[in-house]
Length: 377
Image 1 (tube, rainbow, N blue to C red):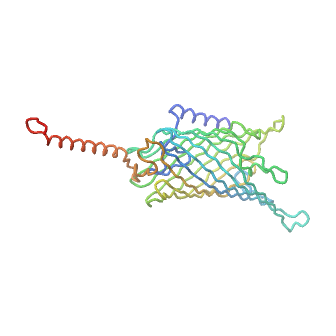
Image 2: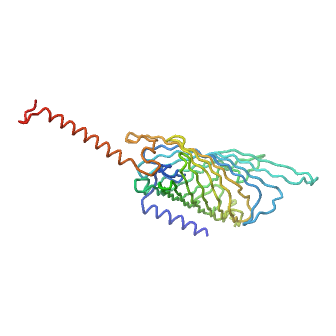
């Protein structure tokens, strides 16, 4: 299964490379608000922030909840900052960084007085991993094609903290802000907007291959994807809802010193979630979003702490840069309105007509100063 995951990622990578590498546009321009895997328009500097809060309660083995005598509760909160830039009409670059807060609490019967439960809580805050990505857009919003197709290649930057300790004991891996894993991710992003009904759709697919780990773990590959519907008959407010899946192959080997151990451990599994939320355009350059994601079905390897919910809050701000950015930037809706109609060609045509009209007036004015014999007065 691990090999199959690698093949899926390689096929995706080769397909994107064959077509020409990718980046893109879209950010709700006359349609849906692009997600993290969409590109950035040419000469646009995009600054975004996304906060997530996850809550876990109880243990799951396979598809069933299992008894957890310690009543384990794991909560994490992360803030991710991203800066992207549209280098050309097709290519864009993005750099991200993150910080994470984690808290793990348990309670268990007192060893002497079982009727009394003892609580223990551990908390940690640290620097998370970063990423750097390059994306290529095959196409993005035009008059006849109100959508975007983008492929990307992303590398993790495993600079996050992985060895935080409490009372001299290293915290569990699930509490560490960093992963210590260098990984490559191939991504695909597609969205389309139907202006007649003011609705759109977004589809994503991602494949991740882990290259190296500071823990010497042979981590399994991951395939994930999502489908989201977006409705926009509410002015600047768009509602959205969809489903996502994740197929994570388990870690196969762990190295301790010179000894390699097989691990059938509690890692990886299949998850399906449902999501609902809203996107709001505050001003032309600024949009915010909020969403709630809940598990629908999961089949986890071994016994793991379940994920109960994920809350996300995000903001995106576009800044126009570059002397050749004739549209200035940030007012993308002046180029493509919410009906999906592209005004860029109209802008160029109107400017041309204006110049021709002005030139014609000059010619007529010059002609008035000439008599019928051709003499210029």
